[in-house]
Length: 288
Image (tube, rainbow, N blue to C red; front, side):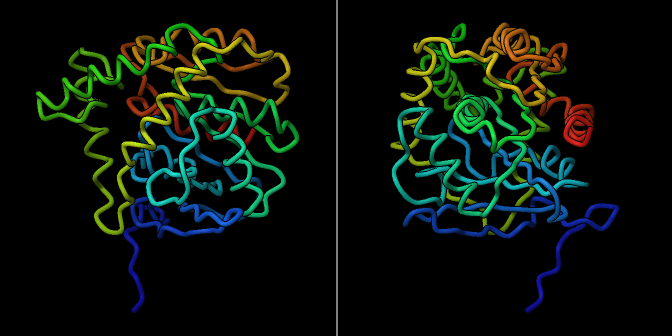
């Protein structure tokens, strides 16, 4: 039976309807979704703590896929991908590179959000010839301010979420202003747009491994970010509680020639709150 996609006004399939595919990576099944024109350099998306395929903001993905080949995936042990989630950023980066190589790519653009931004930095530092352009959002450098405290903050807001019957991202990703609360509700509603063939929730063991990796990353020695020689775009809200916004300014200072975008009255999810502005900015940066 032919599947009928919901389509955007310009007749493009949307992320909410994109089928989930699977590829063998060294004996482990990795799941992914791809959309957009399958030509040119693909944009690989790396997601946040506790996230699987259904947690990518569809407005960001669809915005990029207007003209770019976009691939979102679950790294090892996350969602429906097989294997055991590693507890270090370096291992996560190696797994991501193995997935990228398994798809046959020799050059990619990388978009890392939060935890995904840690992994993206590790990839570009260890595999510089693989990455053409780099976007880092809501993230920070190894040893950055407050990154080792993400575990405590996350657990506190998970408890707060449970007590108030809200998704913890309502508190973790957005400001407490009227603007921030409205953006939180809109974002969480967007994440429900996909109705069929949703991904598996992240397991507790995978979530715990990610938390250990983040804490170790926050405590490790700073890396030489001047070694990043690819065009880079760094973005965040001005009130990020999870990965303090000072880290975004630090990244922009230390990565040669990095472009900086800071959104007012926005938190960790600043690029989601401001997707109408950010998606075109990201697309223009990638296509420049």
